[in-house]
Length: 390
Image (cartoon, rainbow, N blue to C red):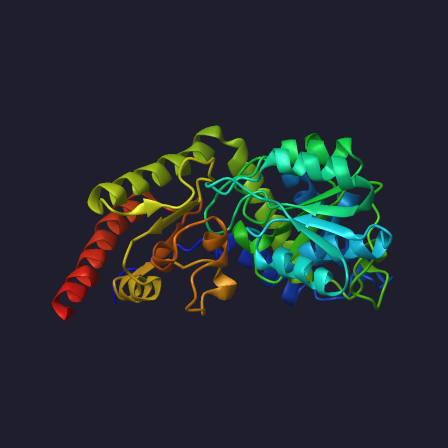
């Protein structure tokens, strides 16, 4: 079997060794309920609160502003639906068709329930039209419950101007949520220096475990609870805490912050990303980078190979040891082109042949160089097969 070259880190990252170790300890030693008042339970509570502190430090928040959830999807749902419940008289929700389904489908659901939804336009690279947002806020601010725009697109890596969006929302007294699942742990966040009210993120995107995420709720912002059944998480999310996941997330946050503070280490993946794209574009001249020209996160290269099907590309790459994806991991079973790419205006034939390659801080130069040889060869083989068949 070919050596695995893992370039699907936007779907999930490998849990760090120390994350696995602390989770094992939680399962074997710290298994008591952190809500119990006895000494054993309170020992677990102390570890949960230490992990909350570590997560808060990663994003530059206060401990009490962190709500643990089951992941980024629940965190985004809690931000949007919790706001809608808390502000019932504000009947308008503003977002973008480029959002992850956790946001996009939640907003669509509110629309079906009678809320008015406004979808902001964007430029060809996928960056939100700030003038359109400014006009919407000027005309409808009193009616808007929330504006939800992601920080980094999970499919293209395009970075939205979060500071400018948040500043406009704050100027008009409108709540702003950002899905930061593909940002947190990969770039500095310093959320208190950002005009952001709610920020959702997920541990398994920065070498933590799956099934645990977080919602930053700025001090003073109130949201309605969505999970009912207990006073946990300051009565914002009931249910016994996922202690192994929380402790694993805390350790992952500690490691990510340590890495981000090492400027040389944190800068290295961007050079690998650029090297990888240049090699592919040189080897496959008609390949197109979706989102090119926009500010993009170093993690992501979404590349279209015209006149091919992404499914065929991914299957052949998998046979040759390269793990990649077409669109979001949660919709990768679909044969339809990515709705995000189509919403960006990418032609359907190009969207059908678009593949997402995504890096992590563990990706090596050797892996990048090997993949940059395997991928063009696979594309050439598929095109040769098509030529023979025709």
